[in-house]
Amino acid sequence: MTERKQRERDLQRSRELFDGLVEHFPNGGVFLFDEALRFTVVGGDELENGGLSAEEMVGKRPADVFPPANAAVLEDAYRAALAGEEQSFEDSYQGRDYHVQVLPIHDEDGAVAAGMAVAQNITDRNQTREVLEQQNRQLEEFAAVVSHDLRGPLNVATGRLALARQTGENEHLDEVERAHERMSELVESLLALARAGQAVGETAHVSLQAVSEACWATVETGTARLRVDGDCRFQADDSRLRQVLENLFRNAVEHGTDSERADSSVTVRVGPLADGFYVEDDGVGLDDVPAADIFERAVTTKPEGTGFGLATVREVVEAHGWSVAASDSPEGGLRFEITGVGPE
Image 1 (cartoon, rainbow, N blue to C red):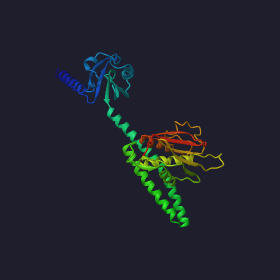
Image 2 (cartoon, helix red, strand yellow):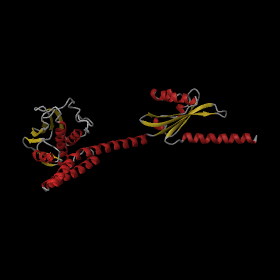
Image 3 (cartoon, helix red, strand yellow):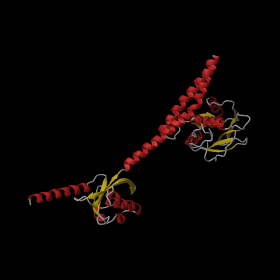
């Protein structure tokens, strides 16, 4: 009798501890169910957040409580648990994410007597993971843009330095210095972009002709030629505007020719529009790429291309509140029109 009473007291204490755990289960819920998939014990501080109550759930099946999609997943897992299998998965309910673990409960003889499901709210964890993944994507894009935009002035500096060593003429070193200054500006601009998103910095009066000629000097242009057909002045973030022109010039030089063309050089023309300006070339044109797609990241017609140049153009243009469109130029090449710029 003494041993039996002790076992009863131990059992009662275990039940009280279990009920307390279920009732106050933190950041989640605990659900016991029988062979008919009916809930026998329900608790946890997450029930109220999901609009549920233990009293209403006891005696019901998942299909009586949850939406069909959730109920189907739960009942399949419950049946597996009653067959002796443990289940673990993630599910969403009422705008929250949960990690659910379902396991069998065995009796003293080792037979499955019931099942238990434990759901833990992992919404914050998933949101943190999504933020980290987004930050990693932004970091990868930032590194790609830095690599892409720095390539032009770096090549210019490397080439001019080699000429300076060969000829001993200091004028080449002046070009090296200007290329290094442009690289420094690009790094600062791209860092500001990474910190502030797509916002532009302080704007100032700029001359289309002056900034075009300055950009042409920092792009590796080979035998390509620049023509500036008129000038206009407007407000812009000078460093970011130079990103636009440098990438458009580089695109014309690198993508404006093909192996079938006898003259491998290309002429790039820049000029004003009524509410903006254009950049066009006499190269190969859109080359079967839809005009709406060429501004997308990773879209390129060259195997060695990155697809970031024109995507950067669109982002900087839109950051200014302008618009950019691409079409075939009258000379058969590619034409970009930047509009919505407005007067000075």
